[in-house]
Length: 467
Image (cartoon, rainbow, N blue to C red):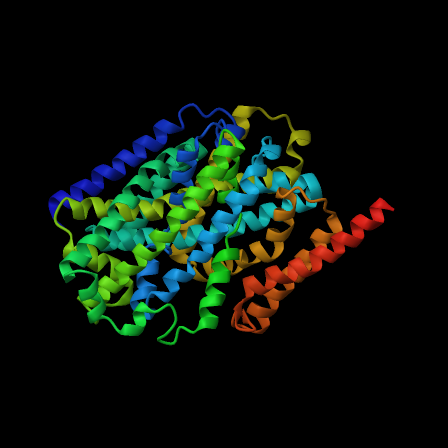
């Protein structure tokens, strides 16, 4: 890495840090911290939502997988694209009725009661912490690959920047930095693919240098059932997790929410293909390369100075933009959906907007610092967190979607569905050990188990109420 490229990365990091602090300078209460002023346009929503989900896994993790297995896994990510499109078509237009809500638990409590809010809060914290932990590892890895810093130094610098501006600025800081990070990734990740293909002599030249089955959706031990399982996992696995629900609550109107969500879904289709094809470019350039170095090797090999520095900054942005979103959402879930309902804080002692803001800022700092500690020192606890977020969709997705779609629901249906979904996950991971049932990811099976129990219980419950 040349001095000029290292300088570009350093200047970019300072810029993001200062911008994040500047964006949050007017935040005065917990509502502004969680959803700002609900005044964002479709363009801003499009940028922040895209930056939030395009993390390490959907970028260089995707290139890594394609390097090993071919283009098939990259197309299976389109399950996530379909999820965003479905949310944009059917859920986003109905978000107007939840304008007063600031969290997922807030939405759940309206139909299922305070207990459901706490369940949503606990699971929300776990899913956010699990994904945040993965992003922390990715931050250290990209700093180690693209800068003179060690893994540990990269974690402390990268995570320190994210934790501080997220803690003090809340969603306002997250959204503004996401917009900048979004611009970086949509410019320089495609540019990396284009320059990589040029270095090889074009797409046809690349195709001649990789195994023919790597250009097929299935093949090279990647079976149709594996593709279906992976597609469904991405369709269901992170649907309506807290950061994405937050994005649905911050636009100035349901129309803007719909447009921003749909644009993000449509953008993800070519982006997943682009980041995956970079893995094939790496394979064509150096088939003996460790797969985890697929995208970094293309960047280091084919990009000229300055462009290389900007692209490295873009890759760092990818991870930071996911980390700040999940960090912010985890603190909101913990304070609004767990701590306050359990302690009944408004009754126990008087509160003020300033005290609430201080509390959630302190919580963000503690969660961020704790996540860094767990990711670096206690890997088995991080594994537990990643296991725990498998409960999100099997427990929460069906009842949450029912509420967002305006269906009449009852508490008994929520309990029955949650028990069914959680039972599948426990069986799959604790007893079966594999996390797979009938060849499908346990998250998929658990979510369908929830649906199968939720619908009839809710039908008979509502029927009894009518009588």
